[in-house]
Amino acid sequence: MIDYSEASGPILAMIHVDVGCLQDRYRVAVRDVNWQVHSGDFWIVAGSHGSGRTDLLLTAAGLLPPCAGQIQWFGQPQPASEVARQSLRRKVGFVFEQGHLLHDLTVAENVALPCEYHGVQRAGSVEGVVTRMLESTGLRAWADARPAALPVPWQRRALLARALVLQPRLMFFDCPLRGLDRRHAEWWHETLLQLHRGEFPGVSHSVTVVMTAEEPPTWITPGMGVAWIEEGRFSVVTSPANRLAG
Amino acid sequence: MPRRITGLAGAVVGTAFSRKVGSWATRVGRPFVRGAQSARGLIAFGLITLGVLWSKGGHAPVWLRHLTRHQIVRAGVTLLPLFLFLSAILGFLVIGQTVAWLSRLGAMDYLGPVMVLVIVRELGPLMTALVMLARVCTPMVVELSTARALGEVEALEALGIDPIHYLVVPRVLGLALSVLGLTVYLILGAIVAGYLWAFLQNIPLTPGAYFRQLAAALSWLDFGVLALKTLMFGAVLATVTCYHGLARPLRLDGVAPATVHAVGQGLVACLLLDAVFLLLYLVAA
Image (cartoon, rainbow over all chains, first blue to last red; front, top):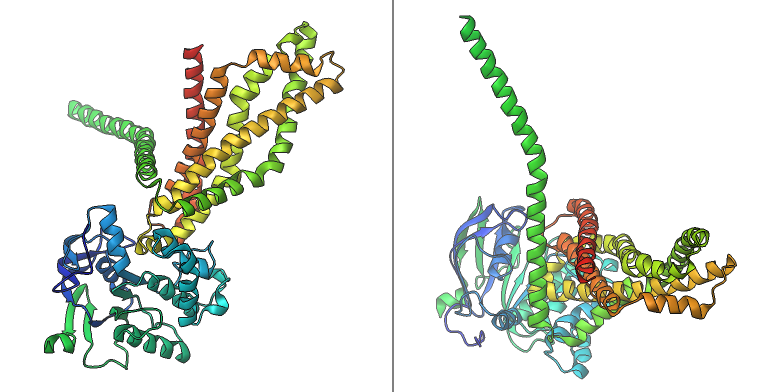
């Protein structure tokens, strides 16, 4: 079995990757992506609406097959076996922009699903993990609500809670700050930084963060990597400073 | 000059003829090609589902049991009142028509065989499947294709959960068991309702004699084929429904066409399967 946690070098490497389009599999959204993400990085991928940000993120997370090129996660290529695929999925989290919650389950059941399905926690402790995660994301009051009843900002938090219960090492966030009021935007800003520093309650380690945005946020610091997608081209503007220094 | 005109006219007529033949061939051929492509997609989807059922049948058993039970309740238990009504109507209709003719011919001994032939072998399973298609599969394909359009399949994949294992396998198992259970329920109800109708018509037939006729007309082949047929009806309906709900990256405007295709193909699949079982009966008999 492949161990995705023991990796030296980049935890994500895209080599001459042509990113396809989720809605139209014959269309290439972003061409010739060469990109490396190392453990501890914080990346912001910016691009206008329809530029292929989400398609790039889905491809980088292994959820959309590339049209061409090669992708490696934790130094390993696309997993061939089901066991390896599941092992990889536990290490790579994805937070969608909105929706994507299972509509026939409550918020608490949505958050518990990955643990229960994979048997990650023993039956007795799943409830504790879910409760802690709901508290960390401020969703305790919505625990028994169906996803359709949740406003979009809270749906996004539920997606975060569900992704975090598997304790991933690398996390992709698709436009987490889009359309939020000031209170939610500040919460997400703080949460993303806490996750990156390994200070988020309920997550025992630091998380490598890759997020998309229409414009780089105002709170960007020199330590963060920035890449742009424009006219189907991906270009790295700045690499994370800590890695360059290291 | 006239020959050239004749030749030109011939060429024009020939081109028009070949165009006509071409358009006719296109009109006839296109549905065949589409049908063949659909059949290939459905068979591939069914085989993938079987593969997942085989390879991951033991994975996440608690969830699989929970989801399958949910499908059985939804597709089977909630339909019991409707099937009680249908079984009463079916029993009245079949016995009402049959008794009228058999009493004229003095052939009341054939009441049992007629009930077995009409209800157990044909109408019971087929009617259950068609009601299931209308009452369960139609909302199911809407639900699945909406879920697909809203990204639930990608969400499951992101969590390392096989969408076929989570969404399709429980539906296939649940619908197969539900069609079997509801068919048995429908047949028993129709048999009892049939006797009540015969009793109301003052037919000199005791319950014992009626059930002896039924028992004599039934063979082990009937039980075996009934079970196999109903399980396959359920599995095929679930496969067609899930295929149209999930197989393509749908947008919300694709939900209605997916539903139309699922209902049409589900109907054709059930009728074809019924014909296959009829052949099986004929060969076995």
